[in-house]
Image (cartoon, rainbow, N blue to C red; front, side, top):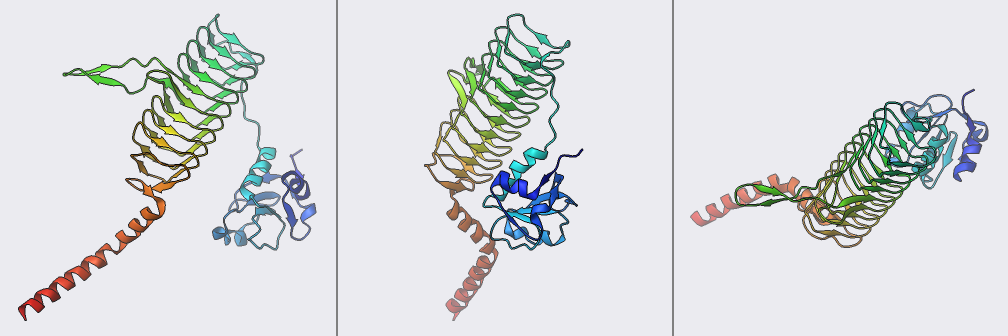
Length: 344
């Protein structure tokens, strides 16, 4: 039998307010986007500028914010996106992972220590003196080097590489292709070529961090590269050696964080942001997409542009560039009139 909940039960779960005709009795069997939702499907709308999508949607009910008026069954929520996420968890199918135990085609060094109910899938490699905590899952094709420490309830997806002496906390998720602990980019010129600087530090990733596919976090030259608890890192991001990222910071795709940069707590880093090295980005900052950060950013600042400057200033400058063709025409007209006056 399909999993189902009434809209009333979902209201009790989220604390949202029921609204619309016969809302209590509406049965929800699935969740989906407005444009694809059908009978018995719940959807959501968080931004009022997409209000017109409600008119054509065939969703059985919608999660909406209070400022949107809607005369059909709905859940009115102060945070519709978050409440919808809570509901999605109910209807989300379980992600298939290996059963606890070591697959016959995995290679686990006899000196490794495995906690309770650890699952190690096919073609995984676990090095000597490595410790893996309870209920952690290595899905398949995961390489874990020597002297690594992995906490409880972690999930490492295929082709993750976790090199020697790196540390993961509890409930860390590493998506496919993540590389933790590759050598940092350190070379010293000797007059004719470049001499590699040994990268003898490690990477420490604290509890509840999630890192997206094909992101790399380099080991420190000395000491550690550290990502503090609760931070979320998107796909295709480069985090260089000796970087420190604070707690509950989010970084969007294709950003590049140069060596020894420090990012504070609760920061939001937009896509394709690039930073210079050895700078400090404060707590509660916002770095707009494609911003080029060449100097320190104070707590609470919102910067954007290249080079990055206060966001409102950057937007004014960008707006003025649209007027440049007209301004040039005015200058040319004024020059022509001035020349005419000089002739007269």
